[in-house]
Image (cartoon, rainbow, N blue to C red; front, side, top):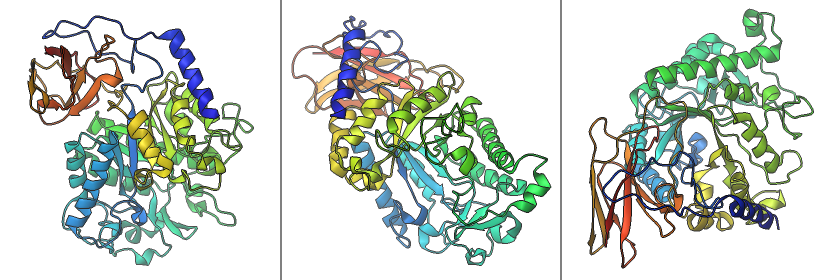
Length: 521
């Protein structure tokens, strides 16, 4: 019955605040008024927004998603990734978060670290192609954003440093490394280790056409009873009178702030985002915290995520809210408002990390309810700060658990969505397309346009106006995005009557031009 309550709230808000567009369309062949800055501005509140980050995590560590196994040929690996990206596009996702440095290694020819063992089965083994270059090209060919996902401090999923390839920096600098819970980590308290990780990541940023740099929740390792992360010597050397907790948080803060500055200096359009554990602190510990009772990332793994938001060191935060609505220790319906409040008044965007892997496969019986994840998305619409969702992971989502992928295709993702504008990006929107023509052909209506002068846009958006007088401001009117071309065929236009189309140009930060319009009968 929870779904009914959420839908009723949305419908009540829509009835009070929106009655549809009802505005006359701009004259064809003339630039229309500027595209709306907010999703579905002036159109019914309950519909899917025009702008939303729709993302999927693609994990490579221990071959969770891609490659599906070690030792596949280059052609097999490439075919697997193409298939994943094609299926993502089929569900109208617009971004993927690809893990390219899972364990202080590389999915590209890095001068700092060896080839990842998850490519060939042997660390340092050349896969015979450049996986990161391939992934960027294939994602962009489908107009998917490619966010490169890096793990800053994890070195190995096993505890023996001598099992690493001889040239691995961890073997060359054993004083950088700590063993904890059967794994190897770079010690964030060692300045040289932090600098090395930053240099390794920046190598990919400077050499590849990335849309984003992405970290997950792993900084200091999660605590394990009876085990100690042995950084006492570094704390003595560098602690400077701080408490151990403050010193560790300061080490992570330094790394995050350094990465933010270096990324913006190298490529201002590249967004930097982090997907932390979903609880910063509990309200019982800190009055600024959430009404929860779970593990606190601030205290347990020394991640002061709220500070990173308030300081605007990151462009987006994607907290992993992997719990159900009403879950006692960490209710989804408590944490979404808390994170919405955390980003309010900042230029940091909020995406929600969603647990696709738990749908129909978790001890919490609420995950067995097919309405649970749809209810998450409906609840998100009540919080305008929520700018999208990212699902872990791609394989579980594509497996269509409890029919959720079908629900996305038919309902929440029934139309494409533009990626939200990056608030911290400098510059202005690109110029509108120079001209637009439309003609009925055997396959539908074919649109052709010309680029305007100046810097070439990153891609174009194509709209078909509806009978309610809505044009580019309504998400339901977005037909497609086009990258690398200036033509599009609407395969299912209204069979008779006059039809109005608009095309806009967008830059790398997703700022949108004024529309160029035309009509066809």
